[in-house]
Image: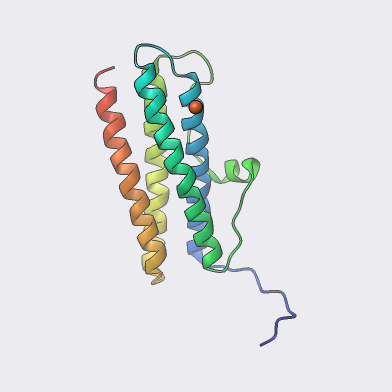
Length: 157
Ligand SMILES: [Fe+2]
């Protein structure tokens, strides 16, 4: 085995899809953390706690996604600037805003991230990478459950 030559760039489409999912998941984690800090009003205690559970779950998820990229022999993108470029998750309000605006923005963020996870799922299926597909299916399931909860909550605001 020749170990002296540098490996050529991996063109596995699963890596690209996972990188986008990593960017969206990291961005959604940051936006959820910001919502945890700045949400106000009569729903404060409920939303402050719910958002914390969500960003903690996302923190574990981004580690799993990045380490899956490593496991399929590519390098994980990282750092706020690089990950922001990979993400299309919309921002939550940056100052005073009704609580429902934070929830509505996070709903959009989870929808975006669900689509990224579905892209990983479908790309992995096409290439026969069932283990990445399994990871992606799990992520779709988590985001769908969170969307159900956030949408249900929004009906009462
Ligand atoms: Fe906190």
